[in-house]
Image (cartoon, rainbow, N blue to C red):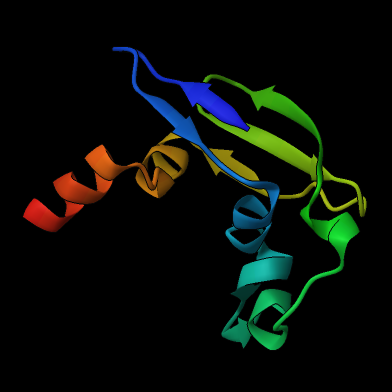
Length: 95
């Protein structure tokens, strides 16, 4: 998935990276209990393929994967922070 941000910056995200970063309670955990992703080392290929992306308000994307998982809301702030391009890595290292 590629996002072109205001100002022209482009960020690219693999389905695998997005899936492992899923912010939903099932994946991250809640009430002090670890989430599903904390207990796994590997995910099936269907869990890593993006099937659909839906805009949620003006603040997030809801990403659905081939496995049916679609409960994570990826805020634009989160996605921008996840950008792994050379420019963003350099900016994070400088701060």
